[in-house]
Amino acid sequence: MSKRVFNFCAGPAALPEAVLQTAQAELLDWQGKGLSVMEMSHRSDEFVGIAERAEQDLRDLLAVPSDYKVLFLQGGASQQFAQIPLNLLGEGGSADYIDTGIWSRKAIEEASRYGHVNVAASAKGYDYFAIPGQNEWQLSADAAYVHYTPNETIGGLEFNWIPDVGDKPLVADMSSTILSRPLDVSRFGLIYAGAQKNIGPSGLVVVIIREDLLGKAHSRCPTMLDYSVAAANGSMYNTPPTFAWYLSGLIFQWLREQGGLEAMQRINDAKQRKLYAAIDASELYTNPINVADRSWMNVPFRLADDRLDKPFLAGAEERGLLNLKGHRSVGGMRASIYNAVPEAAVDALVAYMAEFEKQHG
Ligand code: PMP
Image (cartoon, rainbow, N blue to C red; front, side, top):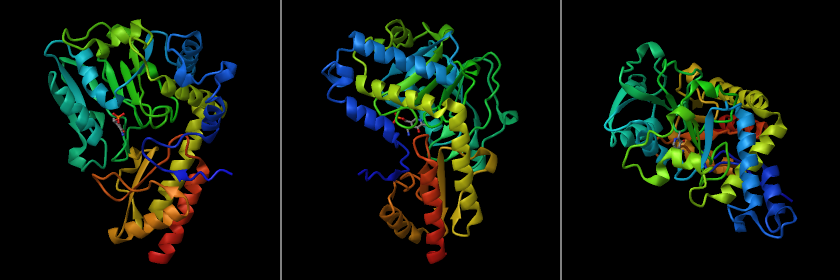
């Protein structure tokens, strides 16, 4: 009997039960080979097959154009904050960054160590409750690229549009939004995403990079951080996180079985609508984000009286609704409703919120 809860964690996040069952069934003996994926050489035909299939499935899901490389790297999205300027800034170059919250500010801080960062727009003037429109952006002529964070996982702020930055490479931290719906990859120079939300387990970061951006790394860039080295070696310059890569591949297969990203878009749209509708209709719960800029994947909300936070979380836990506590830096609640969180989880949460409001509202 499965005792699995509904898990609203922001990351590492819920994984599809069917994928975990496959991994469990294959754990001791992967497809009759008599060993687990964790015990295989990354150079073996078996693992290279797993890796190539995962890449192809991801390419198919996102319709990645043929002039882009897909890299499976380590160090999380945080390492990309340094790796991107080390590869794209050149010697003492400059880049434009858009500040929409905690994650974009971390990217800005790190990039500032390698060159000049021009903060071309900031949501600060909107208390980080709205995204500045492109008419407010002050892009600079000499920027090597433009970086933004399409979905701020903590703030719950998401772009529902892709910026137009002319012929500048657009660089996007898609950690908490990738695979939530179809994406026009051709609009980007580089996309990166930590795996532990919509891709798979932690320990892996996926980078999708247009080929003309390879080979520009700073002369002091560590070999391990040079995208062109990773690309030339099929992301196997050193030993990759093989099990995380394998499990991510199972997620990509699962997504294809669900009907791909159009199907995920329909489901995710239904989930987010239900949850925001419940928040907006209540007297007890609020979400401050400008309606057009609300995140589909990370829904923060507050209770009118924060003394109710503890009983709210305790009651949720009793009902198997886990990890609803907001990020430690902002407090309140946050429901992360990634691909692997079913609509039934949102239904259960909405029902509990109504019940709690009746008792405490
Ligand atoms: N960017 C965003 C948007 C994130 O949500 C996170 C993690 N929550 C990070 C970067 C950092 O990711 P990692 O822990 O993989 O370094």
